[in-house]
Structure formats: structure tokens, C-alpha cells
Image 1 (cartoon, rainbow, N blue to C red):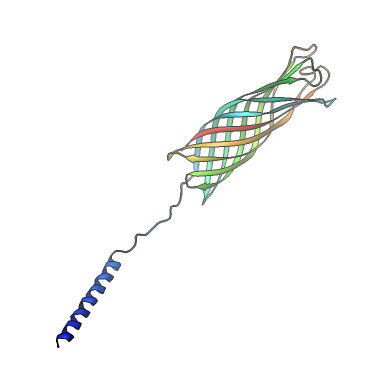
Image 2 (cartoon, rainbow, N blue to C red):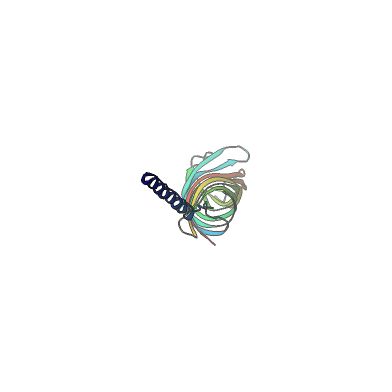
Length: 231
């Protein structure tokens, strides 16, 4: 009888322990983990940018085909305005910017080594599409679009029968890539590279040459940093 009573008592304790353990499991479920949807890049933004521009200005005689290549380089500073729309992790947008540039350079004129040819890009503007991949607060993007800029060309010392200077606006295209990141809920910083090709401008006879017109083009590599405020 005594052994039977002890066995029954032990079985009761085991049953109570198991029930209590089940209560603990059922009463304290694991917390529900909600996946992070990531940061939303959609909306309007505006900002400032500055950097370095370097490349080549080219003058080609419309009759002779003689070409003068002028290396140009300098700084640039300007403003940016754009808009983003985000679809899951894909960010699409439209961005415009305009900048003053100090890109300038001088080379010996190929048609006459007694003279120097100077090229200068006075300002540069672009309108481009952006497409990127967002990783929360960081965006990796590429760009492509239209570009325009004003160039000034000079010949020194002054040659007879010509003005020795010409300025005008040329158009072209641009492509690039970069990275942008939020440093607060409204402010981003970015680093960007772009390539710009401009052309379609002709200096008439009597400006840079007294005997023929000159076709002007320029190609440039641009490295710049920027800061944007997102509204």
C-alpha cells in the first residue's frame, strides 16, 4: 500500500509539472517580427552640388578639317531639383541641374602655331532620368539625359581680319552613375560621376578664323558631391 501511494503521488507531481510547463508556453508566445519596409525615397528634392570638371574642347576647320584640341579643367558649383517615385526597391526619377564652371584651358592653334587657342565652358545644365536600387537609406543609381552649356573660344594674340573671340550655347547628352544616402529623415548626401558630350556649334568666318568657319565641340568628365533636402 505504501509503495502504491508513493507511485501515485509521484505521477501527480509529474502531471502538474507538465501542465504548468504547457501554461508557460501558451501564455508567453514568441514576439511577432514585422519585416522592415525600408526607407521611402519618393518625393520632391532640391539641393546644391560642387566638384571637378575636366575634358577637352575641340575646334575643327570647316574647310580644311584642321583640328585643335584644348585640354580644359576646373571646378563647378550649382543647384539641383528633382523628383523620385519608388516601386518596392526600384527608384525612378527626373532630375535637373545647372552649374557655373571654371573649366578652361589653352593650346597652340594647329592651323597657325604662332597663335594660342583658348577654350572655356562657362556654364552647364542637364535634364536627366534617374533609375536606382534602394537599400533602405542608401540609393545606387544611374542617369542619362540631355545637356547644354555655353562655351567661349578665344585666339591670342589678336590676329588681323577677325574678332578673335566667339561664344555660344551648344547641346548634347550625358550619362552617369552615383550613390546617395540619407543622413537624416530629410537630408541626403551624394557622390556622382557623369560624362558630358556637347556639340553642334559653329563659329562663323571672321571670328576665330579669317578664312573659314570653325566647328566647336567639348567632352567632359565630371566628379561632384552634393547635398539634397527632401520635402
